[in-house]
Length: 169
Image (cartoon, rainbow, N blue to C red):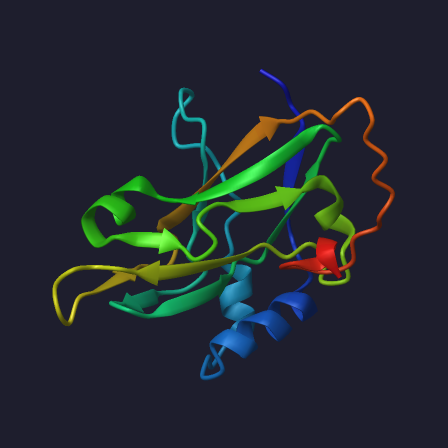
Protein backbone atom coordinates (compact mmCIF):
# COMPACT_ATOMS: atom_id res chain seq x y z
CA UNK A 1 0.00 0.00 0.00
CA UNK A 2 1.10 3.52 -0.80
CA UNK A 3 0.96 6.25 1.85
CA UNK A 4 0.29 9.25 -0.36
CA UNK A 5 -2.03 11.58 1.51
CA UNK A 6 -2.98 13.08 4.85
CA UNK A 7 -6.34 14.45 5.96
CA UNK A 8 -6.47 17.60 8.10
CA UNK A 9 -9.12 19.95 9.41
CA UNK A 10 -9.43 23.38 7.83
CA UNK A 11 -9.13 26.35 10.19
CA UNK A 12 -12.12 27.19 12.37
CA UNK A 13 -12.46 30.52 10.56
CA UNK A 14 -12.75 28.83 7.15
CA UNK A 15 -15.17 26.22 8.47
CA UNK A 16 -17.34 28.83 10.19
CA UNK A 17 -17.57 30.94 7.02
CA UNK A 18 -18.54 27.96 4.84
CA UNK A 19 -20.81 26.32 7.41
CA UNK A 20 -22.88 29.43 8.10
CA UNK A 21 -23.46 29.99 4.35
CA UNK A 22 -25.22 26.63 4.26
CA UNK A 23 -26.54 26.25 7.83
CA UNK A 24 -27.15 29.85 9.01
CA UNK A 25 -29.30 28.84 11.99
CA UNK A 26 -26.53 26.87 13.71
CA UNK A 27 -26.28 28.01 17.34
CA UNK A 28 -22.80 26.69 18.14
CA UNK A 29 -20.56 26.40 15.08
CA UNK A 30 -17.51 25.84 17.31
CA UNK A 31 -19.10 22.68 18.74
CA UNK A 32 -19.81 21.43 15.20
CA UNK A 33 -16.19 22.15 14.21
CA UNK A 34 -14.78 20.48 17.32
CA UNK A 35 -16.75 17.34 16.43
CA UNK A 36 -15.40 17.07 12.87
CA UNK A 37 -13.81 13.64 12.39
CA UNK A 38 -10.99 13.04 9.95
CA UNK A 39 -11.94 10.43 7.33
CA UNK A 40 -10.91 6.84 8.14
CA UNK A 41 -11.32 3.42 6.58
CA UNK A 42 -13.71 1.14 8.45
CA UNK A 43 -11.76 -2.06 7.78
CA UNK A 44 -8.34 -3.11 6.50
CA UNK A 45 -9.99 -4.19 3.24
CA UNK A 46 -11.86 -0.92 2.67
CA UNK A 47 -10.79 1.24 -0.26
CA UNK A 48 -12.91 4.21 0.84
CA UNK A 49 -12.25 6.73 3.59
CA UNK A 50 -15.56 7.62 5.23
CA UNK A 51 -16.52 11.28 5.45
CA UNK A 52 -18.76 11.74 8.49
CA UNK A 53 -21.52 14.29 8.92
CA UNK A 54 -20.28 17.21 11.06
CA UNK A 55 -23.84 17.63 12.39
CA UNK A 56 -27.23 16.04 11.72
CA UNK A 57 -28.08 16.63 8.07
CA UNK A 58 -31.44 15.98 6.41
CA UNK A 59 -31.86 15.63 2.67
CA UNK A 60 -35.39 15.77 1.29
CA UNK A 61 -36.62 14.31 -1.97
CA UNK A 62 -35.94 16.65 -4.86
CA UNK A 63 -33.59 18.86 -2.83
CA UNK A 64 -29.85 19.37 -2.67
CA UNK A 65 -27.67 20.09 0.33
CA UNK A 66 -24.08 21.37 0.34
CA UNK A 67 -22.14 19.95 3.30
CA UNK A 68 -18.91 21.68 4.34
CA UNK A 69 -16.92 18.77 5.76
CA UNK A 70 -14.29 20.73 7.69
CA UNK A 71 -11.68 18.55 5.93
CA UNK A 72 -8.88 19.17 3.48
CA UNK A 73 -6.30 16.70 2.19
CA UNK A 74 -2.65 16.92 1.25
CA UNK A 75 -2.07 14.53 -1.67
CA UNK A 76 1.20 13.57 -3.34
CA UNK A 77 1.61 14.49 -7.01
CA UNK A 78 0.26 11.85 -9.38
CA UNK A 79 -2.74 11.02 -7.15
CA UNK A 80 -6.33 12.24 -6.90
CA UNK A 81 -9.08 11.75 -4.33
CA UNK A 82 -12.44 10.75 -5.83
CA UNK A 83 -15.52 11.25 -3.65
CA UNK A 84 -18.68 9.12 -3.88
CA UNK A 85 -21.83 8.83 -1.75
CA UNK A 86 -21.89 5.95 0.72
CA UNK A 87 -23.41 3.03 -1.16
CA UNK A 88 -26.08 2.34 1.47
CA UNK A 89 -27.44 5.88 1.18
CA UNK A 90 -27.55 5.58 -2.59
CA UNK A 91 -29.19 2.18 -2.53
CA UNK A 92 -31.79 2.88 0.16
CA UNK A 93 -32.52 6.57 -0.46
CA UNK A 94 -31.15 7.37 -3.94
CA UNK A 95 -28.68 9.86 -2.45
CA UNK A 96 -26.21 11.03 -5.06
CA UNK A 97 -23.55 13.67 -5.52
CA UNK A 98 -24.70 16.58 -7.65
CA UNK A 99 -21.50 16.38 -9.70
CA UNK A 100 -21.69 12.55 -9.87
CA UNK A 101 -18.12 12.06 -8.61
CA UNK A 102 -16.14 14.64 -6.67
CA UNK A 103 -12.55 15.09 -7.84
CA UNK A 104 -10.07 16.53 -5.34
CA UNK A 105 -6.77 17.36 -7.05
CA UNK A 106 -3.48 17.66 -5.18
CA UNK A 107 -3.23 21.40 -5.87
CA UNK A 108 -6.62 22.08 -4.28
CA UNK A 109 -4.89 21.85 -0.88
CA UNK A 110 -3.35 25.32 -1.30
CA UNK A 111 -6.48 27.10 -2.58
CA UNK A 112 -7.69 30.33 -1.00
CA UNK A 113 -10.44 28.36 0.78
CA UNK A 114 -7.75 26.12 2.35
CA UNK A 115 -8.85 23.25 0.10
CA UNK A 116 -12.07 22.81 2.13
CA UNK A 117 -13.84 19.74 0.76
CA UNK A 118 -17.53 20.44 0.23
CA UNK A 119 -19.89 17.64 -0.72
CA UNK A 120 -23.22 18.44 -2.39
CA UNK A 121 -25.83 15.72 -2.11
CA UNK A 122 -29.29 15.27 -3.64
CA UNK A 123 -32.13 12.89 -2.84
CA UNK A 124 -33.79 11.38 -5.91
CA UNK A 125 -36.15 9.00 -4.07
CA UNK A 126 -39.26 7.82 -5.90
CA UNK A 127 -41.78 8.06 -3.05
CA UNK A 128 -43.39 11.39 -2.13
CA UNK A 129 -42.31 12.99 1.11
CA UNK A 130 -39.13 10.92 1.32
CA UNK A 131 -36.22 12.29 3.31
CA UNK A 132 -33.18 10.87 5.03
CA UNK A 133 -31.32 12.17 8.06
CA UNK A 134 -27.66 11.35 8.53
CA UNK A 135 -26.77 11.67 12.19
CA UNK A 136 -23.75 13.63 13.34
CA UNK A 137 -20.68 11.40 13.10
CA UNK A 138 -22.22 8.92 10.65
CA UNK A 139 -20.63 8.37 7.25
CA UNK A 140 -22.35 9.98 4.27
CA UNK A 141 -19.63 9.93 1.59
CA UNK A 142 -16.42 8.07 0.88
CA UNK A 143 -13.19 9.08 -0.75
CA UNK A 144 -10.92 6.75 -2.70
CA UNK A 145 -7.40 7.66 -3.84
CA UNK A 146 -6.41 6.85 -7.41
CA UNK A 147 -3.15 7.32 -9.32
CA UNK A 148 -3.35 9.16 -12.62
CA UNK A 149 -1.10 9.83 -15.58
CA UNK A 150 -0.56 12.65 -18.04
CA UNK A 151 0.12 12.64 -21.76
CA UNK A 152 3.70 12.79 -23.07
CA UNK A 153 3.03 16.23 -24.57
CA UNK A 154 1.31 17.66 -21.46
CA UNK A 155 2.19 21.30 -20.85
CA UNK A 156 -0.21 22.36 -18.09
CA UNK A 157 1.12 25.39 -16.25
CA UNK A 158 -1.98 26.91 -14.63
CA UNK A 159 -2.24 27.69 -10.93
CA UNK A 160 -5.43 26.83 -9.02
CA UNK A 161 -7.04 29.23 -6.58
CA UNK A 162 -10.54 28.23 -5.68
CA UNK A 163 -13.08 25.47 -5.45
CA UNK A 164 -15.73 24.23 -7.86
CA UNK A 165 -14.83 25.04 -11.46
CA UNK A 166 -11.70 26.99 -10.53
CA UNK A 167 -9.45 25.33 -13.11
CA UNK A 168 -11.46 26.86 -15.99
CA UNK A 169 -11.47 30.47 -14.72
